[in-house]
Length: 501
Image 1 (tube, rainbow, N blue to C red):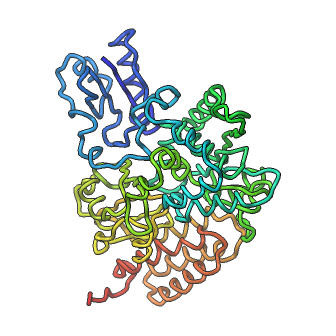
Image 2: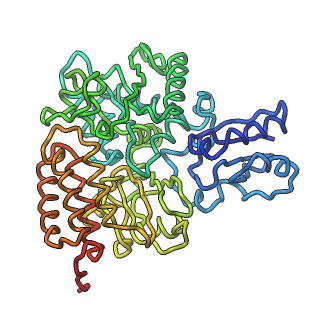
Image 3: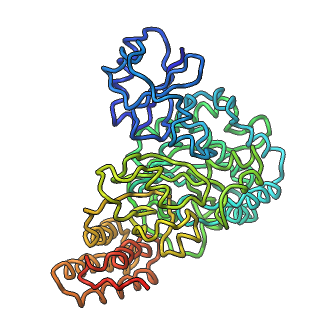
């Protein structure tokens, strides 16, 4: 009998450590393998037992359930892989999460790990770039910039030192994919960063994450030590004679440090404020040297591209959105969690069928996609396929693919005000449209709430200034939730809703 229990931060928050203690008391010397999360957060703590017929699941489990589960008195949910939420997924980036011990390098290799790195070692930098471009991988942190083009810019740059920086400063509301990878499959991120380093001739990498992620920090640091001891990192990567090493750096938790130039300033020990561009970080990044700055999911997807081939990965998706996207379903939703699927599934299917609708049982009113700077989509936009251009065409953005669900009790003017207030609090202060505009936005929305209908025009003008004049996406994207809420729910702003054509 093999027993598995999640030790993901979400599972811990829901009581997994008490369940672990109960298992130890009941099982004695029988080992319990602690794994990352499968992503079905509503079932955490998730217990899996394999008696030779495959892993069966129980969840959410309480410590008092353990004796009855082991005695066979509480039926399982069936085979874990057959639970509909999991069975409907296309797991590429998250293929090992919840399956292996995150810190067991042998298990990682047994499940396909390091195959991509070994293949990459046999390719030239140019061949690796061709593979990345052919895969169609775009930045999963929000901007959707083609990863291969960014890498090629750094590869072609002339410098005595280059860097790979992983942006793990996951600050968007409703997002947890980066944390899940770092806690559940850290070697995957290490392998992706090593491949990026080999491709661009960068020999040093940094994972920049936030102090609110203590479990992820601890797991990543231990995984780096193990990888270094096994020769995956260091001066002789897998006996190739080529060097790449990395370390974890922890920021203080400023939201704006998720923006790449602000992150680089923080990484250098400076105040986390946005830099004007150009120069681009790919040419003058960390310490003024050429630097690849990629999100966790972007880098963690690289190994599967090199293991399976670019054509395999690019075969998933639609349009210019290739591969899979780990959608994080959160908010007022029945089945919250991580759902990795090929681009193309409609928003409505993700919310209503996969997410199961609202946890409150009330009708879904709106969904915010892409964190606190993402647009609100009402039900009339639920047919929109999940894709970069498709969302852009509807006035939204995928961002880090966080989906936060609201039922019909949500106050949309209040949510618009929250967006402006969030921007005012989190602004680095570098540019006037963001620093001052967000404060004026809060004041203007308060005027509208008080019944000043003329202030709506002021609000729209202000949003245009913030969009066009802000140095980075914090000020530039704050108008998205504000204007989308105004467009979809004008009556809550004291406006008359126009009849549909």
